[in-house]
Length: 445
Ligand code: ADP
Ligand code: ASP
Ligand code: MG
Image 1 (cartoon, protein in one colour):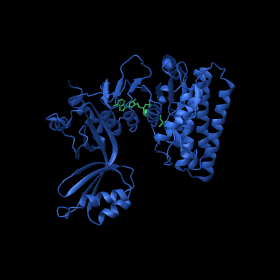
Image 2 (cartoon, protein in one colour):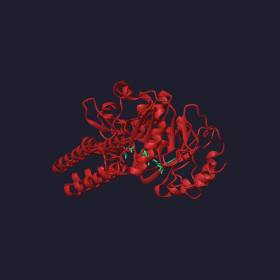
Image 3 (cartoon, protein in one colour):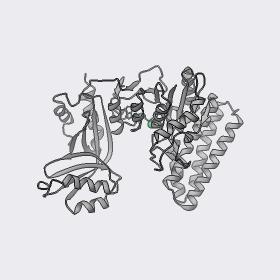
Image 4 (cartoon, protein in one colour):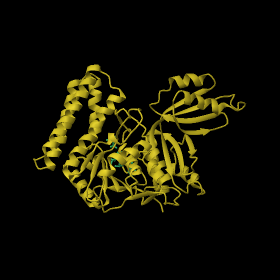
């Protein structure tokens, strides 16, 4: 079997869904499992409705609910030329009724827990898959019966052994050459049946999890670009598609902000040795990227990515020189306060670290004040250069810094896996830094 995952822009309206139906039809001999995202910006709409309800603005929430309902009904009407099957009609009515109830509940309590948010967010994928499954005449599977997770609502951790067993029970019997099975990305459920989500952009991750559980031949991620490009095309328009990527390069790029893949996507595929391809839904015959274990790209720098805003903390202690346990003590505080660190660079009497901009730092800073002074620099960004031969290519660091010219680099860190070199710059310099680096390091032969 194979897994085909289509992102939000690939199923944004009736015309897009028709295009996807064509791709699914072509894949029928391979026993496809089709994993869909919510239509277009539906998930954003659901978040906005939930926030309005939380603020007590029930009218605003209901207005968004009606707008989503109109868009979905319109899509169904267009796909079925006005004659949508009654079962689909009933399913849509039920789902929008459920959404209304949830929003009213949130508005009444003026409380939006991550658990309620997940229940609301799940509607996007449940709606898009109902419409699509009806259109292609495929079997519809509720992903929550298979994608078992823990109870960390909003960013649930999948339980792969359980998923394998549940997929064998609920999906495998339906799969076969000549028919499509349709399910949702992004959503799952706890052992108690509570709805969870894998975090924004999580449908890619779902696709890889299902692929690994069902020993797929390939996981295809269909999106709106011709594969993974050498940089985010919205920032560097001349970015080029990369024909092949190693698992390590892809994982690193995703972790450092290449939105085209959810950061966790690669891991289940790596473990199961399943190739992942990234393809353009509107240009199915065009270029695409293959990510596999076999690839040894041999490129010094394959691609660039960026992530921000981040905050840089520079922790200094005059006593550090004498104290052998300084780093242990430092990280103990981060661990205890649950603040996760991305990059670290150490000097003789100070350590610089980056943390996500929205991390609450108050308690951490109070603890650190007991043995060190901390300088805080906000609105910074991490730029990552990723490539298999990065470390063994002489002169790359110099070339990189020269390319940046007058853009100040505040921190440099070479990843321990040797394929990632990260820089920290002011957030407002990110785009220009990427363009300059791309021109010199990636665009050039
Ligand atoms: P989907 O809805 O299909 O999941 P996403 O919007 O999540 O699509 O991801 C695709 C987008 O990722 C592209 O449109 C592009 O703007 C962005 N992107 C960022 N970095 C890269 C990159 N290195 N290669 C390709 N696309 C990238
Ligand atoms: N619909 C979800 C989101 O917008 C998941 C996804 O598209 O991957 O984040
Ligand atoms: Mg995505």
